[in-house]
Amino acid sequence: MRAGDALPPLRIPVTRTLVVAGAIASRDYQDVHHDPELARRRGSPDVFMNILTTNGLVGRYVTDCFGPRAVLRGVAIRLGAPNYPGDTMVLSGTVEEIDGDTATVKVVGDNGIGRHVTGTVTVTVPAEGVV
Picture 1: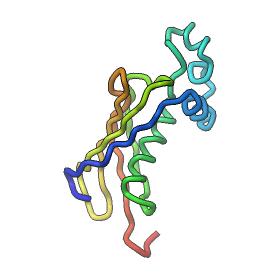
Picture 2: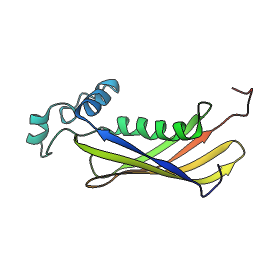
Picture 3: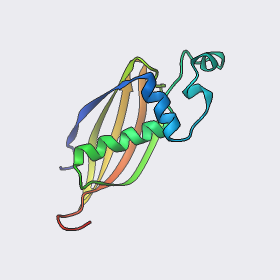
Picture 4: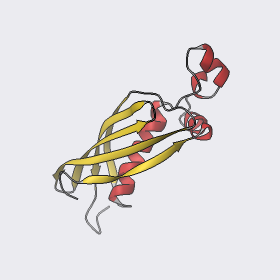
């Protein structure tokens, strides 16, 4: 990959199972991530994805694009529009910089109501034989 290269988009269906499983896996037991009725009482139309699930999906997106030897060195994201069940998040990215075996990638994720996530990911792809 080279600076300026676009990564292929990744469409992720936002299911209730993904939202709840991501919250459980990251030990985020806030009711807005698993209980629709309590989420509505708090002003949300439904449960919504937590930041740790989004962080993991962004990391997965970049490592999938760079291959099985890719190692995440840093993920910095900011959330915007919530990811609600029934929507689809589309992740896209652009390689901003290459320095040796390390790339800096700008990632955005959009859903039906707007921009869910923006961020920068730093990833290293070690040379063959180096782990």
